[in-house]
Amino acid sequence: MIGLWLEVAVDAWTVVLPASTGMVPVARAFARQFLLDHPFVADTELVLSELVTNAVVHGSGVDVAISLVHKGDSIRVEVSDHGSDSSPIRRDPSPDADGGRGLLLVDSIASRWGHEGVPGLYTMTWAEISTEETHE
Image (tube, rainbow, N blue to C red; front, top):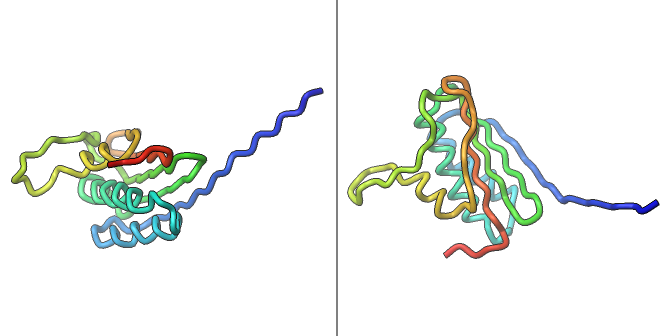
């Protein structure tokens, strides 16, 4: 009989925060504590802060759930809210626009991102940051 040993290192943390833009710095601190001195902590903080801001501004409900998963060569960021009637979409705002750049930033940092959910019930937006490649 041939044996097979598979070991997958996974670290995962989840927190639920009030749905308030005042919680964005708390979410960033959560990411810093989760990753400590990891070289991609700044990228993860930025992606997380954009996703939390979008959930608070465009979602509904009194709270948002944040999950961070570090598995092998990637960091996955998930932000869930109680849903909206529209799906998250990347915009290309004009240079003088006050907002609309959040998912543009996420798209430039993350190796991939997406969303799932049921309109009006919940939305979970996720992004994966590859720790193998260098972002410029």
